[in-house]
Structure formats: C-alpha cells, structure tokens
Image (cartoon, rainbow, N blue to C red; front, side, top):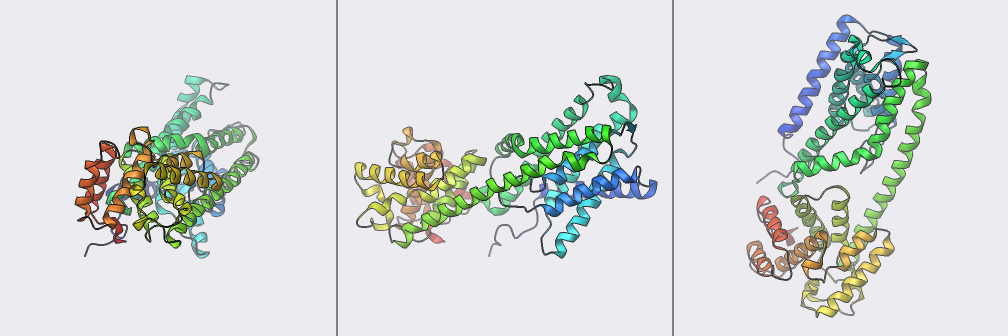
Amino acid sequence: MRAPYGSGPPAPAVLAVRGAALLLALVALARTSVHGIAEPGLALVFGLLVAAGELVRRGAAGEREPAPLAAAGALAYALLGDSAGRPTTHGALQVVAVVVAAQGLAAVARGACGRRADADRAARRTLTVGFAAVCFQPLYASGQAERWFGDGPYFPLVPLTVLALTALCDAVLAALLARSAARAEGPGALPPYGSLLVDEVRALAGIGTAIGATGVVTALGVAVAGPWAPAVLCGPLLLTQVSARRYTAVRTTCGQTMASLARATEIAGYTPPGHARRVAALATAVGRELGLTGPRLTVLEHAALMHDIGQLSLLDPVAGGATARLPAAEQRRIALLGGAVVRRTGAGPEVAAVVEQQADPYREQLLAARIVRTVNAYDDLCGESVGGPLRALEQLRLGTGHDHQPQVVEALGRVLARGGLTPAGAG
C-alpha cells in the first residue's frame, strides 16, 4: 500500500536548501570560533534582537513572515557598516554565525515551552542573510562602496540595492520550499514554480517592505547613534506585526465560517456528505494546475466550499444535490441566492461573484467559476456511479461545447491522473 503524502522523506529541493544552510552555518561558526568575535557589543545587541524576534513570533496560519523583528534584525546586522561613526570589522561570516546562534538559542527556548521550531524557515533565513552579508560586507570593508557612492546622501543606495537583491533571493527560496511543501500534500496539488515565484515577489509589497525598510533604517541608525538605535527603530515594526496578526486572525475566522456554512447543506440533506470539502480540495488543485496562487486561490477555495449554499432555499432536496437537472431559471435563482448569502458572510465580492456565476455558460464565467462548475459536476457524476472517474471525465469532455471549458477539463484530468484517478466520492 502506498504511503500517504507528506510522510516520506523531504524533497531534493528541501534537502538542498537545508544542506546549503547547514554548510554555511558550520563554516561561519568555525571561522568565528577560531578568530573570535569582532565588536562583541554589537554582536550581542543584534543577537538578542534576532533571538527576541524568534521568541515572540506566533506562526499564525497565513503569515508570510511570522518573525519580522528577527528578520529585520538579521538584515540590519548584515547591512551594518559604521557604528556611531566608527568603521566595523565583523564581516559576513560573523553575521551568519551570530544569526545562527541566536536562532538556535531561540529554538531551544521555544522547544522547552513545547513550541516546535521551523527548520526550513531557519535555513531560508540563514541563506538569505548570508547572501546579504556577502554582497554588502566585502564592498564596505574594501572601501569600494564609499568610492562608488561617497560617504554622503548617496551611500544608502548601497544597502538598498543589496536589499532588493536579497528580497529576490528570498522569494526564490520561498517559492522553492512552497512547491516542495505542495508536492508533499499530494500529486494533484503541485503548482507551477513560476506562479509561486510571482506570488512571492508580489508578497514583498506587504510585510516584506516593512522588514526591509526597518533593516536598512536600523543599520543606518546604528551608523549614526550606535548600538542603542535598534531599540527605538524596531518599534514601528512591532506595531506592524500586531496589525498583520489581527488581519490574519480575521481571515482565519472567515475561512472557518465558510467551512461551517458549507456543512449546512450536508446536515440538511441537500448535498452528499463531504461534497463541499471534496470539491474545494479538487478545485484548489485544478486552480494550481492552471497557475492560480495567493488570493486568487483563496477565492477559489472559499467559492468551492460555498457553491451549493443556495440549495437551502429549495423546499425539497434534489437527488444527490445535482442541480444540473433543474430548469435553467431555477439553477440561476439558486446561484443568485447563494451569492447573496456569501455576501453577508464577509467573504468578499469576489467569492460571491464566483458562486453567482455557477449557472452561467462557461464563456461568461470567471476562471474560478469555471473550475468550481467543472469539479462540482465531476463529483456529482462520480456519486451517480456513471462508470468511474474515466467515464465521468468523458462526459465532462462531451459538455465542453457549452457547460465546461476544455482547458479546465483537461487540467482536471491531469490532476486526477497524478492522483491515480481516485473517485471523488471515495473519501
């Protein structure tokens, strides 16, 4: 019997990231232990900042960076030149050593409190900070940065340029790890790497901008005011972190509301048990196959969960919950009522629009609505025992003239083929 997905060994990409981070950490720690710590006061300040940031992180679902204070502190140390007007000599490898040691101490403390460490995130930060330090510290130590830009108003262009390159490096690593995580979820959930990379780059406009700006400003503040600058300059980032967590909590509550309402049709006997959950899971996999990521994928998932909520307006349930047998006008009424319910949940007009379009010809639908309609029809056909998944796909292909977009049907076929064409109603 095949082992469940996610229970096997890590993907090669994950092993490569972990191995590279481990090698860099070992080299940095060995070099620092042999040559000693330069500017131990500064190293202590930034080490404590990174450790404190790791200790206060929560890791709520949906947070791109659950420890922004630690990330900003690590970047600031990597981009640090002068301290109170005096040049520093800590170098790139000491930056990595301090960040690794701080992360390790925080991981031990979190483990003592029963909170699990995130090895992949730690490896990603080690490589990202190492990249920033290797790009900036040699330029600063050799004086090349000062010769290019001078020791005046144009010098901040150096850390800003390095920061932009570092952000791209982090996005590449984040997309790589996200794709490996999706691979572990199952063969049908593998999104294109390009879509994940674009999604990560877009996410830089949010908390990533705040982290980068805080890191650069902190490094420049230490250059003028000395080691006490981080205590003042990192305050706004803490406020940003609190606001981001509140927003994430609202999104989580909204998702839980969607899941609860989706079960209402099953409890009332209008749809088969597990129908909404199966449609949402398969629709999400098809959406990833077609390149949807980020907010667009969230809209698709919520709409798939809620696509049948309008059936609660029927006096008598339709056999198997398959409303395709009803007259077109009745299908349209149910879809519009479902959209009205969704609008009252706070899920957003995008989700409501997808639900409202379920009875429209596919050429008039949004892509998310086309996906939900096709996956819903597939689950209904499998529930009717039409002859198995292959027969259900054949019937969907026959309906590509009006009911289903051919590209969506073929994407569904590819997802199901990778999953062994397991009947949708089997779980």
